[in-house]
Amino acid sequence: MLASIIAFAAITFAESKSLLVQIELDRAGFSCNAVDGVWGAKSAHALERYLAAQGRGADAPATPEAAWRTLFRRAGNPYAWVEVTQEDIDSLTDIPQDPAEKARLPHMGYESIAEMFAERGHLSRRALERLNPGTDLSRASVGTKIRIPAFRSMEDDLDSWPRAPGAAGRAEAALVKVSLGRCEITAYDAKGRLLASFPCSIAKSKSKLPPCGELKVTTSVANPNYTYTPDAAPGERPQSRHILPAGPNCPVGVAWIGLSLPGYGIHGTPRPESIGNAESHGCFRLANWNAARLYSMVRPGVRVVIEE
Image 1 (cartoon, helix red, strand yellow):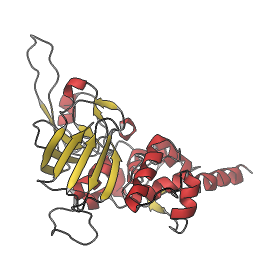
Image 2 (tube, rainbow, N blue to C red):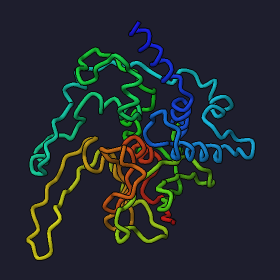
Image 3 (cartoon, helix red, strand yellow):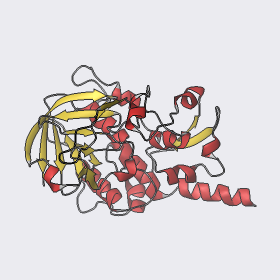
Image 4 (tube, helix red, strand yellow):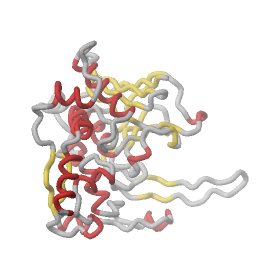
């Protein structure tokens, strides 16, 4: 009886229209951040952006149920069963708190299989658990099968450069806009068509917000390391810097897109649940999967407009 209840709950959650629409919007490039099956402001905005890109007007569906029925009903099964591999297990990393100890790590990998597979599926941890009822993710081993939404891998996006201009299957941005008020990054092609939108985090302190205006992409780095410099109190001697290694748990995540304003960039984060808030130190943060996707779309020289 309990097994039947669990199976029914899994089917109910997996077939949730909110969840399915979030997945299809993300696949199209219009992210709600972490896919979780909860229809809120980020999901509604992602749908709004998608509909605008499609040229839909007054007849546009306003609810996830209507969006599924009119836009995505024939999209097919969005899920895949993925097996945990020995390579997955071997790559797990116990990350210490001390910056000097972090600097001695060879790689800042995932700390658990749950963290790894949630990020692969662009999921919240709770959504990952609900898609896999009865599976103790903390005890996952080689061969454990885990169901996640089937997305293009971050590795494919991070391996996208160098490439020939206009290569098939790759959206290429000519303009990136950063909205400080909406905590959103949008990308447009050379004809001004909206390609993608991503929730982002901005500086917590207004004094660290960049001025509105036009910048350019100066660098794009996949799997960057991070130079950690501890804050020093006035009159206190600066402490030693530490070079933290690359990896999904690096403070700048899996991608760095440098801007022509010194010290500022767009980058990933090991804390996707923090996206959408004003709490960064000045740069613009994206969930790792969105940072990788934007990285695949831009190159040095692309215009970046900071706006209210």
